[in-house]
Amino acid sequence: MKVVCVGHSTYDTTLPMDSYPEENLKYRISERIECGGGPASNGAYLLAKWGMDTTLLCAVGDDYYGRQIIEEFRKVHAAVDGIEVHPGFKTSSSYIIANRTNGSRTVITSKGESVRKLNHPGQRNADLILIDGEHPDTAFELLQFNPDAVSVLDAGRLNDDTRRLGKLVKYVVCSKTFAEEFSGRKVDADDRESLIFCYEKMKEYFQTNIIITLEEKGSFTKISDYEVIPSIKVRAVDSTGAGDIFHGAFTYFVGNGYSLRDAIHYASITSAISVTRVGARISIPELKEVLDYDELI
Image 1 (cartoon, helix red, strand yellow):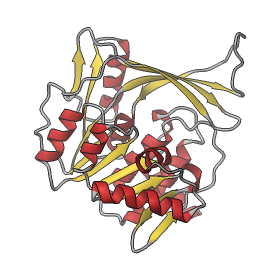
Image 2 (cartoon, one colour; image 1 turned 120 degrees about the vertical axis):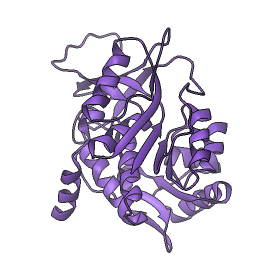
Image 3 (cartoon, one colour; image 1 turned 180 degrees about the vertical axis):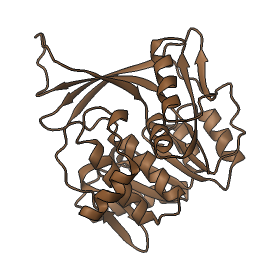
């Protein structure tokens, strides 16, 4: 099965702390975690790590961060020919304060002008597609070229591009914030009516499968009826990349023939395991760990 992912690629520096820092003070920490990041990029890394034939289409600069990202993907045997090195383009970088006490993270990203269309054509065969809205013209071309592929949009930002791309995919997987912005109504994870309202607004527009993630509350969708598929309870130390990892795992399971309910369930386990560790990409569990975890609960 051929997997193609299109999306933002960045390089993360995570600083674990026991509380959020106060302004105008100095702090010293004993460790930092550095690795690649980005929504569809983290998903691509997971898919390659779990043994899928994966290609990532993205743009990086001819710099240290760009070279590190390419090397990371080589180590999980992903195809790197679609990672374009653009001279004069600075690889995006993110600086993350991870509060180990409550699992929150604060992200500051340095990102230049987006590349809407990559030099590599989107006209390449794919059985499974994951996109995050970055490089939208290439993602659009890829989806049009593979209308029968199992395709997933990691809908992080509401804009004209995600509105357009969401109409072409089989699954729109979005955050509660995205659903609120799209529907114009606040979502309460414990209020079934607000969830149904947002779901139906999105369903009416996108005409495809909709999954609204609710963080520790689980995910809301409609199978035979509306339902919240719960997450598992863990002690979080760093939530960086948890959503990206959920999307990557969901793509893996739904692409490998799991039911929608089971795909969400196993993606939730994958994401939950990841937040018990500091760092995003390096917190991705092995596939066996996810499946074995399910047997233990």
